Length: 330
Image (cartoon, rainbow, N blue to C red; front, top):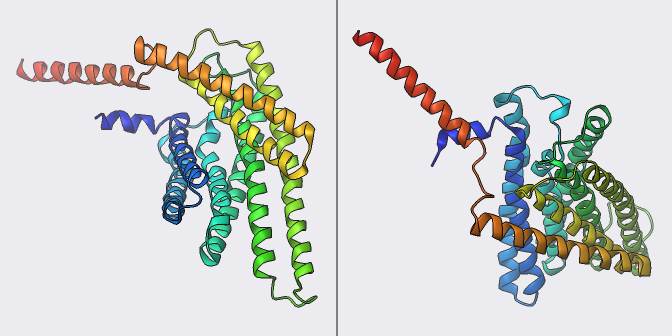
């Protein structure tokens, strides 16, 4: 409806990063298909096709974010960096989790391809998000906290670390099962490929995934603590759509803890995961109810970013054109 306004949106990296939220939602739909209809082969193949659509969308958003910032936006300063920037690259990690969830239900060749792409997506997403997290940490150390309207975005850094922990456990389990069932090993010689040796390799891969997940969960816990203290310093005065940015991080953090509790059979992780699940549910209910009341009933929540300034700019251009035409006629 407003192509000129769309161009203005691309001049703000925070607005561009929000395109990643569409990919994250789409990935959750695919995971839902796999989890709710695992016994229907048609549903699995539909999810497999949608997975590649998600991969394509993720590549478009994540790979285009940096060129758009370089070519169409003004130079950034360190005080502008926020957790929202991560939204452009979190879909890489979420898509890898989709692949890890889908792999156990696929035949050998599609499963191997899905595993490979998912590992590539996870590693790329973790690398880029780690770079941004370093910049964001430096921003917190050298500049003030984000504004009250954006302070809830301090929870977004929990997203890539929590989802990364969940994804690597799924991928490690999928790779381990594939190696054990197919007796696959690298063509480098060594001991014979016996069932026991393949089982040992698979178990080692599973434990490696658990170790990496533990490191990422610790990192995610650090960011949760920092976000809580940041919000306590600058409590928002009113509700806005940005409050939803705390739901996804808590949800993926809960998923990672639940998976660790399952793999390690640890009561501590199980209890902490249950607590986080309750917190996530309460956060979702709060955001959903307030969004419905303020956004749907009262109509005071949703707005088009930059629309007011765009209308003022158009009105100014019309006055300039009218003034120039009057001078020509005179």
